[in-house]
Image 1 (cartoon, rainbow, N blue to C red):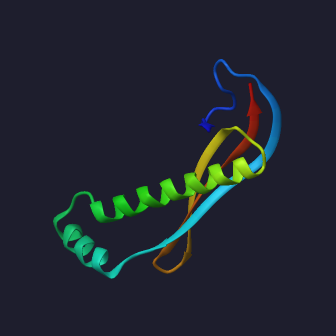
Image 2: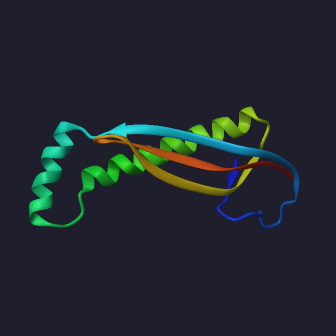
Length: 104
């Protein structure tokens, strides 16, 4: 599956536009990570526990994005984007979305 943030794919021709494809996951903070993060917050610097959690959430949302695109018959995704929103206290949704297309 080709995924790009641009609206076209160099060297490929879009022959069909499938439409919106998406994948999301919701992640909650973890008590153990919160304790470690609070210690890091006191000292300053990157909170690696949250960095890792958000990276995992982005990867899961991309996996689900690809599944949705394949289910709809796309073999590529253009104009791919991420968005994140709070769904409740201590939990956030990571959404990956784009336009599913068929390319040659």
